[in-house]
Amino acid sequence: MDGKPFGPATLRFVPSETARSFVAVADAGGKLSDFTTYKKGDGAPAGTYKVAVYSSGGTSAPIPAIYEDEKNTPLTVIISDITGDDANTLTIDLDSKAGKPSPNSTMRGFTAKDFEAAKGGITD
Image 1 (cartoon, one colour):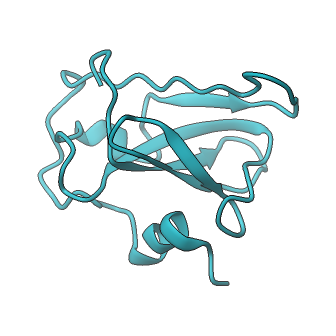
Image 2: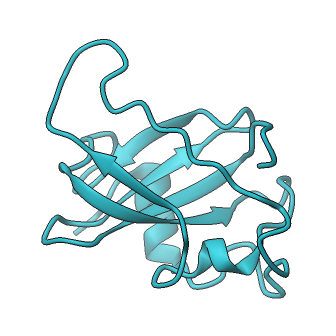
């Protein structure tokens, strides 16, 4: 956020096409890991996605509510079906001045099932 690493956070990638949504976790340094579509760490399908970001653990800075809105978030990424060094390297820039901070919990709109899927794998 604002050019500095942001985390911890949970990110939900919502497809704009027919791909399945997936989640990932950002650590305190902003590094993304545990890309989970069906089971923990199984990766992400190729496609174009809107990115919703949810502060997790209560230790990260407040997130402007627009970033938690899966339909209206301005954040987008493209996941390509390529391999190799730096393939699908993602940089997701958040701006603390993008709007009012979310007035609700740090997991606004993100269900307990979604969060568990991000932390430990999808159970169904």
